[in-house]
Every structure is written in structure tokens, then in C-alpha cells.
Length: 372
Image: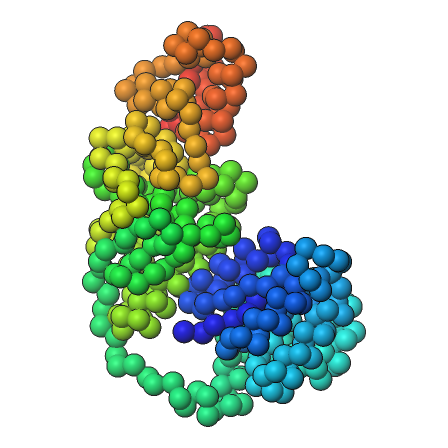
């Protein structure tokens, strides 16, 4: 498996990099300063480097400067040998970097890509793949050492096992729990079942809201695409099985969902919620549900939907509405003996998640489950 060193001091950019590497099936180490990057280079073997030139010299000290990135570029050539380690420069300073292109190439830079990374065309994944392909052509001795595996058999499904710190598919790790990226949250949401005991189907909008209220549909689509690529690569490289794009996570016919051939196993001390605890309201024949937080309204929410948390009052509202009741703000105030502003805040959050809607007529109006 390919392994890269990522040198980047911007946490938001790093999230995008990690999703790309996840999709490629590449492992990585991360350094956000010159000192840590040098130590990692001396101690480990890497197949390529993703380098942000403007980095601090030491952890939690000083300002980020381009000269620190240039210094690291020179150190890489000294430690690894001239041209033997591909280096992709990631820069948010296009003109300044362009002015130094010839000099940076002489120092060992292989290719350049601007930040933020393009979503189509010359994407970060494409640049990485092109650079590695060119490197194999230049150094065929390294490529010849890689044994070609026998033809892969079709993927027939298997267990998707959830552990406290990682998720496995057929015994192979596909996601590790980190504070960056959204793959962990996506799989936890999609593992739930509806009242028909089928895996829930979440639209792109609903999945984005459930993972992170500020996340857009394009971002969640990129995350799922990267996760699919990671699954395909892992299953092929480690199990010699051909896993298609929709074999694990499908979205044909409406909504993202796990396929029936996937068997969810919970190994982190919690029990998978029973079907009767899942609201599972559907839209026509597609079975597309709103965010999973609403689905598990009576069960234990702990560690089930990362990024989404419902309080006792909100769960009560969703449970009542699931039984076709209509609720007013006053109903909630009386039930829990709380102030009007508290209930307004609770209901506003449910509206924002797309779980409920307000019907103005007949007056004075009431809340109901969002139409699906």
C-alpha cells in the first residue's frame, strides 16, 4: 500500500487531503511544521510527499514561511536522493510560487497543485496518480518489484464491523476514527435500519445535515466517492476481490444506503437498535429517510449519530409526531414545564435539520413530521 507524508499546517485543507488519500487507499503521516516533517522523513519510507511550502519551523511556534518549505525540499533530496521521491507542491500562493517554479523544480519539486483543490479536471487525486505513474516510468526497477496479483473474484458481501476506534469490512480496516474527515459519521448513519428492517436511505441533503449542519451536498458526495474508492482498493489489494462502486454503499433508486449483502456487526459495547425504534418514514417507493437522528427517536443516541444530538424534549416531539399526533409549542412547554424560549430553540433545531415542519393552518398552527 502506498504511503505518503503530508506537510500541511491548515486543518481544513488537511480534511480534503485525507478524504482524497482515503479514496486512493493510501496511508499517510501528517506533519504541520518543518521540524516534525524532517523527523518523519528520517524515520520512515514514503512513496511520495505532499508539501505545503508555507509552514512553521517548529510546533506551535513562529510564523509560517515559504523558506521553511524550501528548506524541507532541499532536505528531502539530501536524505532520499535526487528525484527518487516524488514531491507534489500544494500552494495557495499561485503567482509567488509560479515565479519560483524553475528554482523549485531544480530543488526537487515534481509537480504543483493550487489550493483550494479543483473538484473536477485536474484534481488532487488525478495529480497524485499522474505523478506516481510518471515516477514508475522513470524508475522501472521499483515498479518491477511489485508482483501482479491473480485475477480478482467478485465481491459477494460480508460483515461491516464497527469497533470503538475503527471500522472493518470483511476483516480489513476501511475507516479509522479521527477528528478529520466525515467517513466515520457517514457509515454510522447508514448502518441504521427502518421499521421494515431495511437499511435507512438518506438523501444527499439529509446525510449532509446529519453529519454536519454546515456541510453541503457536494462535500458529502465527495466524501462518499472517496470512501467508495477506499473500499474498492482495500478489498482488491488485501482480499483480491473485485468490489464495484455500488456494492457496499448504493444510491441508485433514491438515497444513500448500505446494500443487503452487507451485514452490520456492532463490537463497541452498544446494541444495534431494533427496527421498532426506527421511524423510517418513506417517500413513495424509495424509502428515503431524513437524518438518522430522527430515526432513532426512542433508542440510545450515544455514539450512534456522530455530529447530531437530540435532547429529551426533541425525542419526545419526534416520538409523538411519529404516531401521527400534531404538536404545538404550548404542548411541549406543558409536558416539560420549561420556558417558551427553550422550546422555541428545540423546535428551531428540528426545523433546521429538516425533521419537522410548521403548518400555519388551521390557526394557531402546529408542528408535524416533515413530508417525505
